[in-house]
Amino acid sequence: MLPARFARSVLAVILIGGGLSACASDISLNSSMIRYAWLQAGPDNQYAARLVSKAATCPAISIDGITTPMNARGKRDADFPDLVCEKTVPAAASMIKVEGISLPAPRPDSQRIVIIGDTGCRIKSSVVQDCNDPADWPFAAIAAAAAKESPDAVLHVGDYFYREIECPKDRPGCAASPFGDNQATWEADWLKPASPLFAAAPLLLSRGNHETCARGWKGWMLYLSPGPYEPNCRKIDPPFLVTLGRKSGPDIAMIDSSEAEDIKIIPSKLDMLIAAIREIAPRFIRTTWVLSHKPIWGIYDVDEGTKTVNDAEVVKKEVPNGVVSNVTWVEALKATGIPKNMDLALGGHIHSFQANAFGPDHPGQIMMGVSGADLQEKPLRLIVGKNVGGAKLASAYGVTRYGYLIFDRNNSSGGPQWKGSLKTSAGERIAACSIDGRTPRCEARIN
Image 1 (tube, one colour):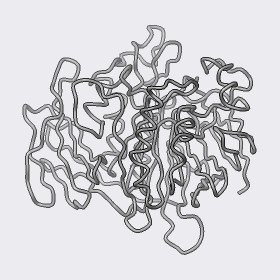
Image 2 (cartoon, one colour):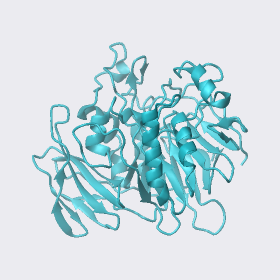
Image 3 (tube, helix red, strand yellow):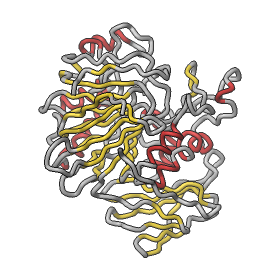
Image 4 (cartoon, helix red, strand yellow):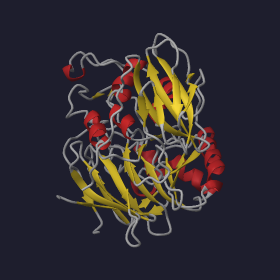
């Protein structure tokens, strides 16, 4: 995620004119050994049941009445003392239980989805959040509110690990916080506050730049990577598809862009992204949304020389009009072409919410970087007509306020395919939103 200082007030620019309720079931961890358990999407139309346990060995798991042993993932050590277990689960599974704990089964015809991103509590250099203050770091409240919506799937756009250094002595708001790439930090930043979501729905988890080989890769590899465990860092996880609707989609293309540089081209990283796109794009046979941490057509305005971008002059030269997209993504798509049937890009990284549309002939972009980490300090300037990574902005809505995004499938014959809301950590509506083909749209609403 781009470094930025947080602000609690709404800093919004709306450039377009134009009662979700249910209860999430609880996972009751009635085994004192199992601390966390969840189901996440993986390659080959399969899911992975995973858990963290204090037991000496992995338990058995029951999938549709068939009981098999779970397998250990990685090895315990001083940094990660608890056992991590996993088992592959087919997408058609309807009942998953482990030691009396029921995990939410895959829902291939999802009717309601939640989108979150950039969720951890930043402690790094001069930017320090008060992790002990729910107003300053509201992810636990956001996760609880989102879980109560009873979603069929939870999509996370990446960046889980944020507590990289020790809390400064003069900041009581983060006193006693764990730090570094270890179990205690991953528990504090992700496992514990996200637990209500584990009970609510299967997870689709994108890797962020905070989980790269230079940062929190150990926890990512052990807990969340969709691929097999490796003792060494894997620079990029292979792409794969997850279906949210067997008849009409969308299919979600999971593409690891964690290494994609924002403002400069590093050939080896560009080649990795090009290879991933070329591998997965032929499978875009119907409506497809790309879930990838780095936004392709997101906006971070540096026209006024903001200090939060390392090299504003380079940005201005490489991206017209001083708008920061992700130059690695832009160059990769020049090489591959925008895949057929790609309607939408879902990302985060920049700590604001944006719904950007570029007309019916170009995919839209939703950015959901507001679920816990420090918010972007500058007001958004989403100027219609501005060049964003080679695409002309047709309409936009932007806000920097903590929350989560929820969409319901519209099964009627008319109107947008998805309707929903951007909501606060208390579940209050910030904006009414929709997705109509390639056009994401939001409008501020009081009610």
